[in-house]
Amino acid sequence: MYIGRFAPSPTGPLHAGSLVAALASYLDARAHHGRWLIRIEDVDEARTVAGAAEDIIQTLAAFGMRSDGEILLQSARQIRYSDAFDKLGGAVYACACSRKEIADSRVTLAADGAVIYPGTCRNGLAPGRTPRAWRVRVPAATDPHALIQFDDRWQGLISENLAEHVGDFVLKRADGFWAYQLAVVVDDAEQGVTDIVRGADLLESTARQIYLQRLLGFSTPRYLHVPAVVNDRGEKLSKQTGAQPLDVRNSINALMGAAEHLGLTLSHAPSSVDEFWSLAIPAWGQRFVRT
Ligand SMILES: [Zn+2]
Image (cartoon, rainbow, N blue to C red; front, side, top):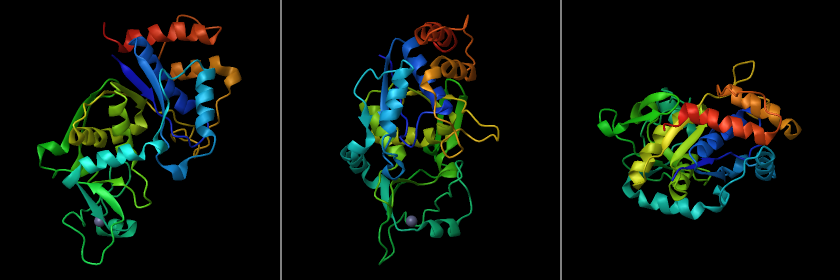
């Protein structure tokens, strides 16, 4: 049974970039005759905007996309992340470093622009040091387990050496919140997600998530990362880069724009949202579903 999901962060209203990810995940679920779930990724409560989750859910509904099951809120699931964290045992360790100490000790940047952690606290904290964050150990670069490979249904074969690209990464943050990477892996496993369809900006998180799935004994879903939508300046669309909220009164235009970004060719221009789906689902299926 195919189970897919769309997992927005409630940091603002849905925009053209997030619509593309929602549309792709919804089309893939429908073309597979599967289930499609909405999950609100508000694990980073410092970034949550009041009312944004409800707004996103209503906007999706106006476009014809409704969750086939309960809508999970990560902020209500701390105990699950805590249980998973406990299961990791000796794979995690306390880190007392400040951001500055980490930056000063090595200049290498991870693929996502973060500073690669130099492993200062790997073998225990020096006396008098207080734990701030908790990190998971990744294998040495020469260890075959450090190399994570997966076949992305859009991007092709992706390989990442965790030690070289990321280093030991944070699972529990200094501010007390659980890291996004841990929450996503726990939620996907618990919801039985078989297929993750999302924006390519999350491609660089995938190797870390697969690594955590392996440590926790979860199966790895299939992945499909769609190209991110960028603005005139080449920046990924987001609230920070000035993306405009979607206008639900113009739902067909918005859906057509998202479908075009995904390279879908519809036989004719739909005159209703229902007609859009009746054209777009088979168009997606033809391209991405093997029969
Ligand atoms: Zn440290």
